[in-house]
Image (cartoon, rainbow, N blue to C red; front, side, top):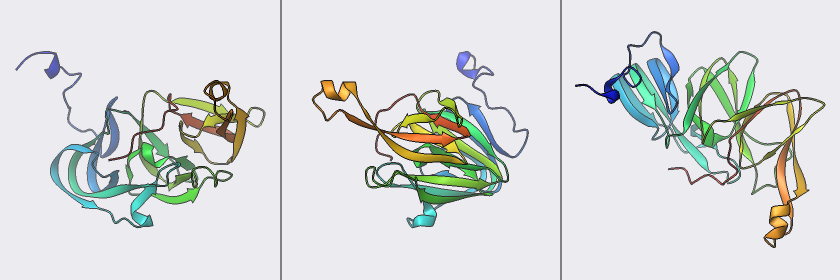
Length: 223
């Protein structure tokens, strides 16, 4: 069989090491030797001796997604083999979380992660009144975290001199030690549309980084 489809650009090569890696711009490959975690429905292919277990709907089995507070169900993947994960052809990235790090991320942007990582659900400080509460997941420990994003994300440095204001529908996540609060401003577009003219952004202050997706549109309901 010949053709561009079967070129090295698309052909899966033998795994060089266990764990998570970016297969291509739209998918993540995970060589499982034990256990890992992924969002339910994100597995697109696998080979080997793997078992998939849907996690419960309690707090320990889901990630809260921003604004609505809806849950993102997870599944555990156990055994030995390889699995590929993707979601709606969104771009994929891998974050290395090291001991002592803390990364806050919106549940809708989580694709998969090492079982060595811990996460807790928390309300974003200063955003408790936004849409019934702005819920994110805080990852700690040591391991890799696979993220998805609609388009190529912007990684914006936050310094004590220059706080960053982000649309609450566009924020993907941010690093530890950043202070968050809600900021209300006048929106010219809203005034032209006959609205109140008030827009709300998430204000981040301190030293660190914030990750933003290049779209402020409200995401589609998770499947």
